[in-house]
Length: 381
Ligand SMILES: Cc1cc2nc3c(=O)[nH]c(=O)nc-3n(C[C@H](O)[C@H](O)[C@H](O)COP(=O)(O)OP(=O)(O)OC[C@H]3O[C@@H](n4cnc5c(N)ncnc54)[C@H](O)[C@@H]3O)c2cc1C
Image (cartoon, rainbow, N blue to C red):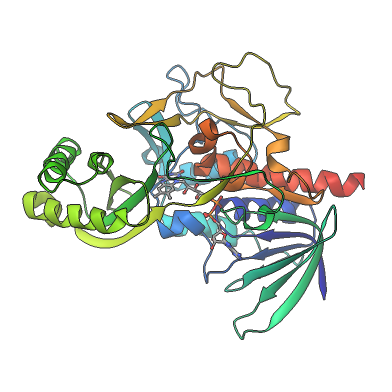
């Protein structure tokens, strides 16, 4: 049985950030990923922009929200693309990137002797004691079961797979009531969408929905273009898996009605309907006066909260520059198991903060901080 200091499960943006930090801190690190390539949701959904990296403050444009790895990534892309990487969409600032450049940033650095990357390997089972994670069982490509142990573990699976046992509440992204947040479904197209489409598409979608008597929330379609990767993304708000067929139905009708859309080649699609952990931890942020110390606030999120409104679609609650959501270190610690840490979109957050805390910029910060917390706990014990 191979023994590590730190085992990280999931090689999405959070797991990669946790791995790089862990390796640099000198911990013997293993990263386990069930797919053949790293990147997780951001790769599957062909993301074009890192959201949540900046403070969205007009007086200080493109000021970084979290230092450390977020700053390194910002610098790397700025050196590669210059000003072109800095994009303002409405009230928010994002960093444009090309997929392979982002994964290369991590893979080119994850090369030390103290790092092992297990690709195409699924974490299958976890062995717990009363208070700790003891070891995990993984299945290799040849269907062999291998046991790995570590002093600390980081769950970066995006779905809190490892910690389901110890959390009180699990919430699907899809809403239980009208006020909850909806899931998302994206259709990714090759080529440039004209600016006018951002008005024409929602208008035409609304007509299609009325004509075919489809659910009201499906009409909230957005379209955006990234010139770095020459891709257009059509995004739908969805409630459950069966809506996806309807999204494709609407897409086909849109292609029939809007010539400019028909010129864009269909590439792929992706969905966001997951079970996610939720916890009523006390977060600083809008409407909360209590100040957190830097020690308690390990990462800040300036990305807007998303609140679903059945008549108006997703409504954004923008964050004031001096009052971001402060993510407490407790959000990265498992409730029950002392040596289990959480990173990325499966950290423990109240519902209001879920959308704000899961964007890539914040996942980078929580991934980094999960490894720092893991390292500190190793030193203390
Ligand atoms: C449709 C959509 C559009 C979005 N648009 C943007 C955007 O434009 N910009 C932005 O910043 N954010 C965006 N987000 C949010 C952002 O992509 C995600 O929240 C973020 O990428 C999550 O990263 P993560 O590392 O926490 O999880 P994930 O990226 O989900 O990574 C988890 C990884 O764990 C692996 N894994 C899971 N279970 C196991 C297991 N048992 N064994 C081994 N491996 C396992 C998975 O294969 C995956 O690689 C979007 C999300 C969606 C769904």
